[in-house]
Amino acid sequence: MLTQPTGVTPTLFKTAATIASISAVHHIYYGFAELYPAWNLLPSKPQRAARTGWDYMNVSYAITILLNLKWARNQGPGGIEEEGMLAAMVLGGVVEGWRSLRNGEYLPLIAFWGIPGLSLAGAILKQYT
Image (cartoon, rainbow, N blue to C red; front, side, top):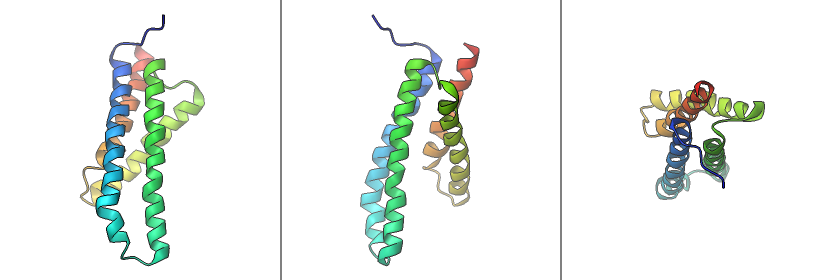
C-alpha cells in the first residue's frame, strides 16, 4: 500500500499548489471581467499581444500546480531539471514581484513571491529532514 508523505515539507508544496489553483481561477476571472473589456479599446495588434501574454500565464499556473503536487509526493524537486524549474519560478517571481511592488500592485505578490517562496521553503527543508 502506498502512503503519502507527511510533515511540513509536503504540506508546503500542497499549500503552494492550492494557492496557485486559487490564483489561477482569479487570474482567469480578472482577465475576463476587467482586462479583456479594456483591451477591446486597443488596436488589434496590441490587443492580441496583451491577451496572449495574459492567457499564457495560465500555462505557468498549470506547471506550478502540477510540479508542486509531484514535489509533495516526492518530498521536493528531484534532479537538476526540477531544481532548475524551481529556480526559474523563484527568480522570475522575484523580478515580476518587484515590478508589481513598485507599481503598488500587491495582490500579484501572492503568485510572484508567496507560491515560489513556499516551494523553495519545502525544497530547503527537504535537505534537513
